[in-house]
Each structure stands twice: as C-alpha cells, then as structure tokens.
Length: 338
Image (cartoon, rainbow, N blue to C red; front, top):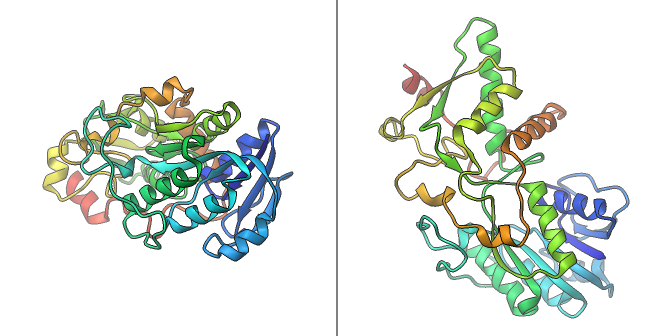
C-alpha cells in the first residue's frame, strides 16, 4: 500500500509513519521538518500546510492508496489537502477528537452524541472543538464514505507533545530523589485511587488507523480504550515504580481538591473528578472502535516506555507551551499536604 502521512515527525504522526513502515508499506510524509526527525526509508516531502501552493508543489501529481492527516489546528489546511487528494487517494483517515461533542459530555455517550458546529474553511484555531469539527467536515465533503474519523480520547505514550504523562513522571521522579535525600517525598494523588480512566497509546491508535486503511474500514469512531482500562491508582503506581519507587502517593479526596481550587485535567493532568462537567471524560462507550479492531496495551507498558523515552532526551519537554498542562503550583501542593 502507498501511504501518505500529513505530518509524521511529532507524536501521533510519528507513530503512524512507524506503523506504516513496520507493516511494509511505501510511506510518504508531508511536513515542514521542524518538529522531529524523519523516519528512515520514507519519501519525505516538505511544505507548510498553511501554504496551498507549497503543498500542491510538494504533492505533485502522485497518487496514494491512503492518507492519514494528523493536523491539529485551524481547519482550512485539512480542507486544502482534502481538495487536492480527493481524486487520487482512496482512503482518508483523519485524527479528530472526542472534544467535538457538545459540552458537557454525557456518561456512556457514543458516536451518536450531538457535536459542535464547525467551518471547514475556517482559519480560526482558538476553539479546539470547533476546529476539529471543521476538519471532520472538510474530509467528509471531499471523501464522503471513503473516510475514517478517529475521534481520539486521551492520547499518551512516547513522544507525547502535550505533557500530561511526562508531568506525572517528573513529579514522581523528583519525589523519589527528595525521599532518598531525607526530604519530603510525598506526591498529591487525586482520589479515589479506583477512579477509572480511558486512554489510548499513540502507537495503538496509529497501528489501528493503518490497519483500517489496509482493510478499507471507514466511519466515525471514538478511538480510545473501554472505560476502566486502568485507574488513576494503577497509572500513578506505575509512575512511582519506573521513576525509582521512593515517591509516596498521598490520596486526596475530590472534595478537598475542589475546596483548594484545584481542577482536574490541567492542575492534575489525566485525572478528572467523579462529579461535575469533567466527570464523563473517562466514561464513553467505545464499543464501536473495539469491534473495528482497536486494542490498547496495558497502561503500565505505556508508562514504562514513556519514561524510557524521556530518560533518553537531552532536554525535558515536560510542558508544551499553549497546550493546557500546568500542574500543581508549589503553594497548592503545600496546602494540600500540610
């Protein structure tokens, strides 16, 4: 299969390229070449997705069996490439997001839930949900029933460019170092520890999208694990284990966290409280994706592999500017542990 990956050097796109190469496909990438290395053996094309003329020149008149688009900003570049490729690509896979559903999400919701409005020709990326919906509409306009919309949930794994799991790994690593030197090695852990989580390893998402391209599987899918794939307790236990084992998790109730002005998702990445608007982020019906072949590896493997990747870096990309991960402040941590 000839596979075109729009992106391919950062997080999910990198995983798609690697999955395509591992499956023996002829892989082409189109990107600016600024966010990561190119995979060996790949046909590399350079262009800024916001420059239609550059994209047109880079793609030339070539044809592909399938394309996967990982663009995560304003919709217009998705529409531009969909226009250019509609008559010379058979299958289109677009990495969308469960954020397209109207807020707040409903517990147990599936792909039939109402979605936000979107404009496929918009140049506005300020509203992430509307931008992703606009991208979906751009693909649907040109590819119709030849497309796969992968509405991903929480994506973790090596090369994560948001900083959620890396934040927890840094926190437990620093606590381990503190404990070994006789200082305070406690970590605020958002309870209850049995709180279920839904997530997908980028490598599992990528491999599934490549297999869907091979089989011609199309449609709209919430691409994340079943509810309860793991728990916040199991995830943080794995973080403690791989970063040295000396950190002490101190479980704090959702009520106390709320009273201290601490929110889920941003102040405490990955976790969401069991009540309120964020509660259903880890409680969606993903049976359609499972039926279509999506499987997710154990969370402990994702944690261990992410830590191995981070340890090999010269610099620590714990937080990516503008992507929403803040983590607890020192004052919040002190107040909660006092």
